[in-house]
Length: 114
Image (cartoon, rainbow, N blue to C red; front, side, top):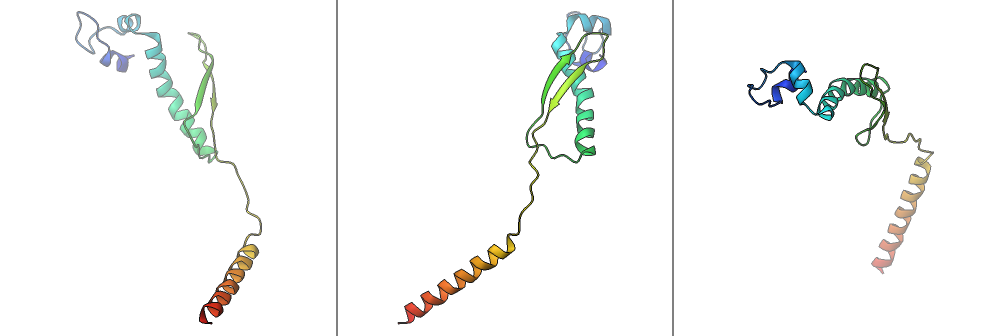
């Protein structure tokens, strides 16, 4: 609450001088929830991403399941990650393509010399 109090303007008080209870009653609930989520969810999200070695493509989608005061908050976080894939035996195909290109170039060289 003290961090929110630093940016909250309450008539008759200097910034960061109002009592936290007064700041709580004067502050929009969504602003407090956003601050709390930023302080709690960001480190937890980073830890999970690091622990599972994920590489997210875009920002996560966060959906609240339950955000009742005095209760544990429940969230769902959806993350888009790149799909895993394995390449087949592509080196043989590359060799064939290179060989075909060499043969074509030889044929073109012969034709251009005529």
